[in-house]
Image (cartoon, rainbow, N blue to C red; front, side, top):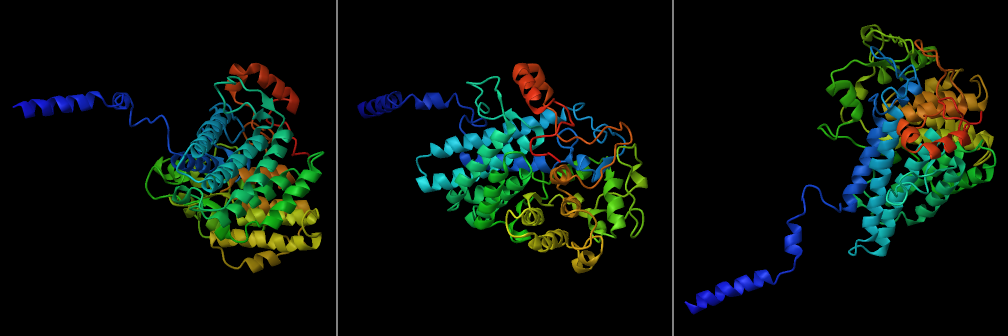
Length: 478
């Protein structure tokens, strides 16, 4: 009996002598951890970025309409450039700051505090984080202009962050990206990386292609010619995309919640809100463009394509619908692709930033060919031989030739279609039938910024020339 009593008391003593950690753990919610693994945060932020840039939900993303590849049917406010009725600019701003940048920042902090990682592993992961952060920051600058940057992502210290000068941010981003590229070695986040699965060579091509894009973006910006030259030269020497296999793409799943968000908006929702815009369809009809049956449905009959008047209250059944690929829940989305990169190389050649103007035709042909190959369209040679397409005979300046085909190739890449138009000022976009408003050249600042961060919003608005949809940003000087 004494042995039994002794055993009981011994167990009680052992339990009572345990660390307070056991009791502290009882107060932790396992479904809401206070520290999330860096791998999860990186993966989540990456998917949030792809979803936001790909979505066609009118509450979040209307770039397909700003580029006038699509227009609306029943509800036409967004096609008529009402960007604040649904808080579109607010939602875009919040998604990128909160669900992309802040998650990436936390992923970096958790990576650096992980004692099980070697310094080389930390450097590799941080470099991948940096590439996505630079991508996101540069997009915000190109979309809004001056934005909170140095005081952003630090709400405990800066509740109302000041806005930084857009050009200054951009040059800092170029420096950050250039510094990160040499650290893109090893497997990084490995299987938690949904873009390349940790393949370092692909990440380097992605980073260099982004650097090329950013260099071309500021090629006309006053006072930034040397930065543009350095970025383009470094990118080309470092190695950019050389095929569609290099594209920075996310492969979506056939099951929710990992389906392509366009499928969610067009199929799962059961709605008929979008049709092809006449702006795009008319130009492709004039060129007898072989991509039409791949971009669009033939719901009006074989070989018949009629775009809805942009911004009008269109009948869904009367106009051309989007194509079958857009209805596929597994359709991949890209942040940057080989076609886009090849157009930048053509631009760089014409400016003698990399190569000579004589090389531009080859890159131009590569860009169009990449678009055809990506969509599975045969016989690109016949299209390139057309007098209105052939680089030597197509009408207009080199900027107009590149810009028009760039815009055509960015179908399913709404932001880049709109930005190609902002960069090259072609093609001529339509005024919306309802409002007649000019095409926006930027997003206005979110209403919350005006209400809650008024002093800094006011200063930023004055600095860029007014918080208007038609204000030209520092890089958009043509």
